[in-house]
Length: 91
Image (cartoon, rainbow, N blue to C red; front, side, top):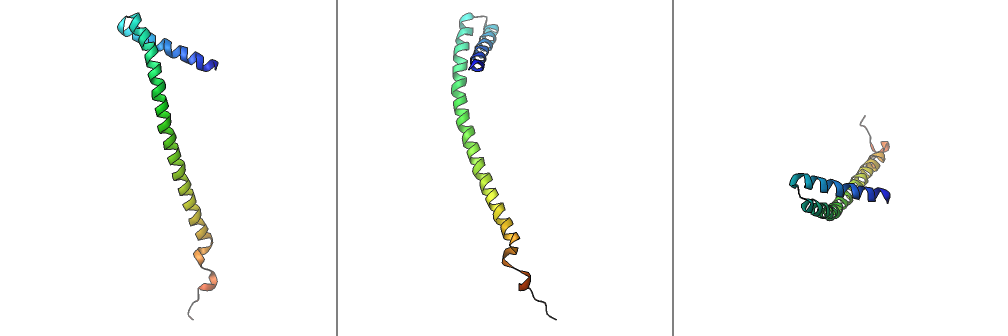
């Protein structure tokens, strides 16, 4: 929790300092220091939603690929239903 609080303080400080240096206004600096982190929090929420969907989609794709690879390797290890006794040569 300490890390979260110190990060929030740092974030507010950076936002305030940048806005103040750009505008010279304490009011604008203060407003930006409050609004920007709030907007970033909402944006981060939606970013995480999209990221989770992409990770879930990737897991499904990897699972299907692994399943198909396993099916193929099982088919080849079983010689695809053939044995050496099935092959005869004409003499």
